[in-house]
Length: 335
Image 1 (tube, rainbow, N blue to C red):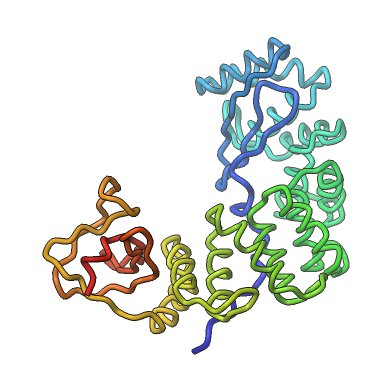
Image 2: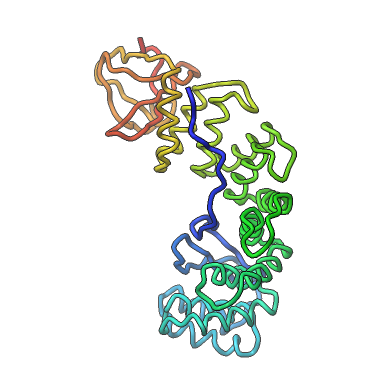
């Protein structure tokens, strides 16, 4: 049996940004959501500037024009977070007509004052071609943010060195930045540095290190890492070959829509023994125990694949309305 290539490096894409981005020294921080939507997370930090807080309150109430009014004065007086906030409003067209040139102006002012959110956003806009500039401009701002510890900048800079976009290809430098971001918990970076360790690109080849990084990302729900981790278990690389664990991770990835994982899942399922349901209207549960959620019911003679058992409960693989599903059933209800 063979598996599809599961070691590919994921492309640079806005949807790989983390869901949550906090700025320092304010009531809260901007969140870069997958589709560019503005959001705000409030924190308990004392002594915030009154007009900035008023702007935040207006933003939370979706009074965007009022938020812009409150933020404009501190922005014009050089407050980098207010400048970044205004830039995002102009970029998104919230409370004002969308204007990327104006957004870029405010982002640059904030970036020049050391605001890493603005530095990252400028780099992203240059990379996407939404602001006029050169690839070197993106590298400049992303490098500043990366050196300041921003994990998104570190991740994207790592990919640029890997691809040779705006810089010469340098796999060692790519691996360095990806691992730094991975150590901060960036799931895309964790998956990618795992791929580099698996292939021995920019680092000394190590299946053990690859599986460690894949597992960190997989446990955070990264479907690419879940697929890669499943393949390591299926191939017996960095760990003993175990198709039950392979099925577990392939199923998790397939549930998120990863077609490659779905194909790999079918291959690993062939290595597991089929068990038959030994009762009528047997409840399949989300976790071991009679107090857990019922996912579906099955009848006598229907087949499932058993992954393992604990304390009288068996974890099984089945499909519910065509969806790969992991469930639990009392072990005495399997033939």
